[in-house]
Amino acid sequence: MMNQNALVVGATGITGSALVRELLQAGWQVHGMARNLANLPAGVTGVSADLQDAQATRSALAGLSPTHVFITTWSRQASEAENIRVNAAMVRNLLDALQPAGSVQHVALVTGLKHYLGPFEAYAQGVLPQTPFREEQPRLPVENFYYAQEDEVFAAAARDGFTWSVHRPHTVIGAAVGNAMNMGTTLAVYASLCKTTGRPFYFPGSQAQWDGLTDMTDAGQLARQLLWAAQTPAAANEAFNIVNGDIFRWSWMWGRIAHWFGLDAAPFNGEVLPLEQQMADDAATWAQLAAQHGLAEADINRLVSPWHTDADLGRPLEVVTDMSKSRRMGFLEYQPSDDAFFALFQKLRDQHLIP
Image 1 (cartoon, helix red, strand yellow):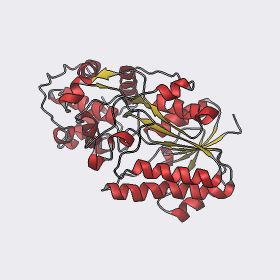
Image 2 (cartoon, rainbow, N blue to C red):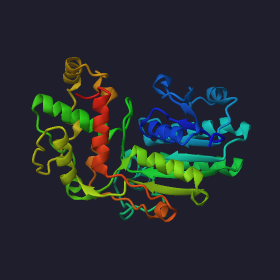
Image 3 (cartoon, rainbow, N blue to C red):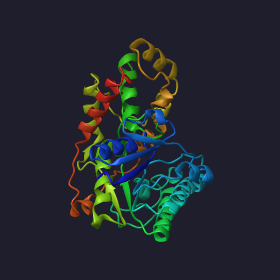
């Protein structure tokens, strides 16, 4: 595998960092593009570039000849129109910069279930595809930056002759500081605050999420599918859902999470109490908790993304995802979702990010 040279874009994020570990273990050469190169693990060659700047991207990637490109990052903007403009340009600038080398054989793009649920501005509104979501379901008739990112990959593939794969996880569970969408760490911080302050550990979401079936995606599970697709000819030029393989109800999972932290789950009465509201004034409390326990990150805003967790847990419908497509092609990995949460919580504790 030493002739396989990967460029992981977003290498220190939840997905990117898990993918880097998988690639290194498999013996790949790995270049990692990230805002903070200091967080890259040993064995990864760092690349720093502002993907919104086409010239800077060309300069940063000059002389680099990756065989496989994994795009695991995006930039959140104030509106979906801006999400489309900025994130499409980032993908386009990246692939344009790599074109002269002619080395790219495969490009993998990570998007998500907003492909089926719609963008944040119209999240889970209107007529949605029937669950479980399947890859052959058509795009929604709304603007969506995931579609714009896909179209940039498709256009570059047609121009340059590489194969592609698109990967659509549900909420990704994994460790990363400073990530814009991080439910697992958000819930760990919330649970830690509840335990310290004596506040009730109350499920913040909707009755539909509490009672309905759902699934999730462990970052390691996603990384394994990315690597599998990159090496499986039958997976070329296909989109794949990726979840852990189990389903659960939050009415069960919430108690499991509470037990891990030594808490009693508060009874849920159907009232939606968003985390963005519950945690609005917690910055000072977290800073005190960090000082008391010698935690590595005292800025709560570097750890939590309550707005994103509220979007997921507040949905008015159950969300389950079909995995048959990649399973038929041979991807048979499985990860229990409660174990994914527990492994994350232990990792956060080991890294002194939660008490």
